[in-house]
Length: 185
Image 1 (cartoon, rainbow, N blue to C red):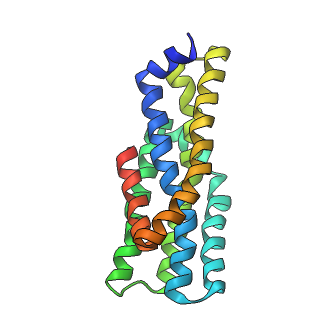
Image 2: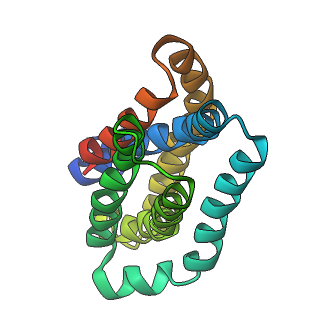
């Protein structure tokens, strides 16, 4: 099977599209969320605390991401993670616009959001053999395609966020990220 044949594989193609959509949203949020915190609180310290909170969730709970994926299955874990991250991310701008977003509540939402990042990424890699089989050549090609999709979002997401923050604001970008989780599911 060639790379072209792999791209015709419905399951792999769906995974690649989901990766591009979801991770582009996540990359945009990694720019928009600090900007949102800085502009709404005026505090660089609070911005740093929010980023540290998200990173702590990824680091602390990421250790169990693989165990969760094994128990639930890769595909189901990815769907659960996206289904959980969508309302968590949407809650931030909704609560802010309603005047109900306190800083401690923001930290809780960001920690919970971060808790679902590691299991999602771990599940992606574990899903590949289910999609394309155990053949080392096919698996290597599928992994290369997934990495290309991931890397493209790492390059395009942050600058896109910068442009969109200037056009529509950081709050809107947080809504867009929430929507990307719904779309990628």
